[in-house]
Length: 102
Figure 1: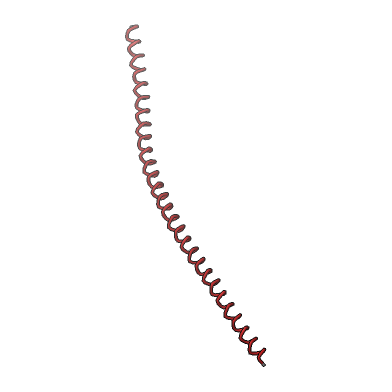
Figure 2: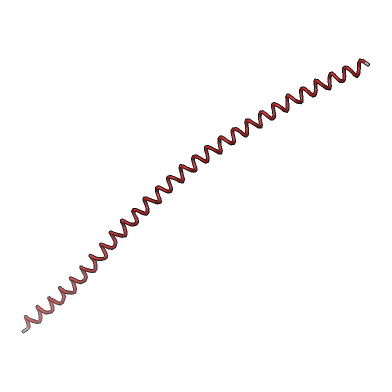
């Protein structure tokens, strides 16, 4: 009878062990599935990140182009201003000549 009790205890322990293994197996499966989902999310986020970096680069390039054009216009404006100043000086000079000849 003692041997029967040992077997029953052993079978009971094996049953508990089997249920623990089943629980661990389910947790492992859940973890694997969650990891797959997280990997997909990570890939999507990385693609979004790359897209945003590309857009930033494009915008920086556009800003640089706009800045260069603005500087060119400013230079042209400065050159035009100098030209106008020169013409005004010439005109003043001619007026002064006319006035002094009288």
